[in-house]
Structure formats: C-alpha cells, structure tokens
Amino acid sequence: MYKKAELAPSLPSEFELPFGGNLSILNRWVKMAQIIPWDEFESEYAQNFPTKKGAPAKSFRIALGALIIKEKLGISDRETVEQIRENPYLQYFIGQSSYSNELPFDSSLLVHFRQRISLNLINKVNESMVKKMLEITPVKPEKKKGSDAKNESPNRGKLIIDATCAPADITYPTDLGLLNKARVHTEKIIDILYKQVKEKIPKKPRTYRNIARKDYLLMAKQRKPPRTKRRQAIKKQLQYVKRNLAHIEQLIESGATLEALNKKQYKTLLVLTEVYRQQQSLIDKNKQSIEHRIVSLSQPHIRPIRGKAGKSVEFGAKLSASCFEGYVFLDRMSWDSFNESGDLKAQVEAYYRFTGHYPESVHADRIYRTRENRAWCKEKGIRISGPPLGRPPANVSKSKKKQALEDERIRNAIEGKFGQGKRRFGLNRVMAKLDNTSGTVIAITFLVMNLATWWRRVFCVFLCLFGKRTPVFLGEIIYSYTWGDSIQKKLIFNQA
Image 1 (cartoon, one colour):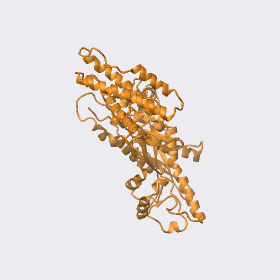
Image 2 (cartoon, helix red, strand yellow):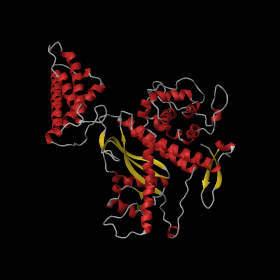
Image 3 (cartoon, helix red, strand yellow):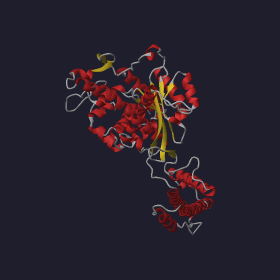
Image 4 (cartoon, one colour):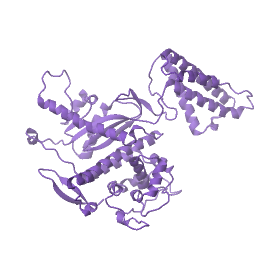
C-alpha cells in the first residue's frame, strides 16, 4: 500500500531541531533537495503498489533520496542508514520534517528501493532535473566569428557520445573454475535430493568429489599451464558434471522432487545445465567463444564485453551515453555486447526532444563515423567530428588541423565523465547482484554526477569570482550570469 507523503518542509528553517537553531541554507544537501523533482514522479512510483492492503510503503523521496546518498558518499547500505540517522541534513534531504535519532528504515529496504525504482524512472528524473539546472545556471554561449556569425544555422550546441563498460563484482571467470563451481553445486543438489529417496535407494550415488577437487587444484595452482593440459582438465570436470547431472535425473525418476530445492538452488541448477552445454560445445567444436556465454553462476546475465585501456575483455553491462552542456545522460544499457554506432541517430533525436533543436556538431569516436551516420548527419545539417572517409589528403590546411584538435579536446569531456564515474563513484565495480538493480545503480551514478556538476557550477564558480566577500543573502537567491563583453549579475529567486 502506498500513501502520498505529507508535504516536506520547503525551507530549512521549517525543519525542527531538538537542540535549537536552523539548518544552514548554504548546505549542499539542502540545495540538492530543492533541485530534484520529487513530486513530479511520485505517482509513477506509486504504481508499484496497486493494492490498498498492507503496511504503508516508504515515500518516493525517501527511496530515491537514500539511493542518492549511498552513491554520493560511496558507502554500504548499513552505513547509509546510520549516516541518515546521525545527520539532520540527510534527514531533510529525504523529506523528514524534524530530526529523529531513530533509524528511518531498515537497511534491507534499500534492496527493495533499487528494485522498485527502475532505470527508466531514474533517467526521467535525471532529464527533468537537468532542465531545471539549465534554467537556473545557463551555460556560456559560444561566440561565432567571421562567416559563421553571418550564416547562422538553426542547429545549436555540441553533442558528445561514447560507450563504455561498467564491470560487475565477480571473480575473473575461467572455464575450469566455472565447471568446478558447477560440479560443487550438483553435489549439493544430489545430497538434498537423496534424502527424499534414501529408503528406496540404500546406496548414495557416487560423485568422486574428493578426486575431482584434487584434479581441479592440480591445474588451478599452475601459473601458466599448457593449453593441452588445461583442455584435459576441462574435459575431466565436464565428465564429473555430466555424471552428476545423470545422477540428478535418476533421483528424480526414483521419486525425488525438485520442490525440495529453494528458489536459488533451482535457478542455479538451470544455469549450470546451460554452462555444461556451452562448455561441452566449445570442446567438441574446438572453439574459444560462444554466443550468450555465461561467466558467473550467481549472475548469469553478465556477458563478456570487449575492453579498452589495457583490458582485452570486461565483464559487466555495456553503456551508451551522451554528454552536452557538461551534463551526462545514460541512453542505453545492455548486458549483451552491441555496436554503439547504431545508437547515434537515437541519441541525436533524444537531444532534439530535450532541447528543441538539433546539435551543431556531434563529437564521437571513429566507430560512429560510418557512411550511414555521416549521410544522416549531413541531411540534418550536423557536422560530425573526424576526418572524411577515403584516402587522407597529402596537404591539410592549418584550419582543418586546428578543427580536428579542437574536436578531440571536446570529446575528452565524456571520457572525463566515465573516469569520474569509475574513480569517484561505483561505476568501476557494480556491487548489485541482480540485472534490474544493477541498472538502477548505474543510472543513479549518472544522476549523482550531474548533481556534482551543478553544485560546482553554482557555488564554486561564484566563490571564485567574489572571493571571501560572499553576501550573507547567498542562500536565499541564486546567481546566474549572462555572458558577453562583461559579466553581469542577475538575481533569480529560488522557488524550488
């Protein structure tokens, strides 16, 4: 059951503190709480609770606010709840009206928050929030010189696109290690099923678990085993798994039921059966790769993705993102590898829906510069970065060299965003275990990066301009700047 939350205090002065005083209006959590559109998407979140029975669920602001706090601070679920309990600013951020020394909710609820708030919902919140940010802090427009100023194009802005991988928290998978884990799980399932029919079958099926363990360790302890020996060890583990799967079928025919297995064990049985089929197919066909390859028994949705920067392969979700005006957006997430060049049209159209006009130029990697994409961009009046197709000319003018260098510098912005997400936040190691919760964590990372960008623009730039002579009334108003020959101050009242 979901009940619409009571109106949270819009001003920090309305937040009740037991020890007196008021919250600072300059605090970052206070300002970020005012920029996030909590009420706009509360009805969509309430659709997760169709019935009117049961205990009331936590509000959308509490759920989303807790996930933002966790990602912003880079802490665990338990630490997130403790930080909220100890910090009145965090309690104001999640919508409480007064300070409380009790836990706002159990830490296990964060798992349910990640399941209920989907990736698409977070992307909608991110877009709405960025629109509000751009209204409050407009970005400096670029000056056009010469012929560019005379022939003005309806297209405006620069769109930067690229793709990356968000590695998941799994051990580095090997064929031998996967088969060893599959063998161990089949042995546990045989033990469970045999208890049901031990009166009919007095002798337990033989699994050779000790011998199989020794065979695995004999090869796993070698640093660089030869390919022939590694292949022989894989064949041995395949035989052990095949024997165990046959024993499971015999136990079922003798009267054992799979109802004795819990949900996780039953899912693991299905996964390891597919792992055995894939590994046996690789051995029979003498191949190194197979489609939809499973690399983790606990997270079967993870697939190998071609890596970059010294990594031949990464294991996680592949992301296609776009960046403009300093803000980054998650356009596509997939567990299967894909060619990111096919996303260029959709990303440009998303830019058009967001801004109302097409970009003046698209800055992308070489893989995006296909003939189809170049022709489509030319039709829309969009300049795509990079040299033209065909043999490079013998003599390149200085203006073209300067333009190519400038394009590469602009494209570095999205590389920096990926670096920020992987170094500062949890994009380099996604700790969520489910496919849908992993998508939520990744989308939250993009949202938090935009919050960090906005906070830096609004306050850090202002403090750099005015130094220590910051007015006392800074918290009640927000400064925006109109750029031209000189900087002018214009006061905009914060009605968020």
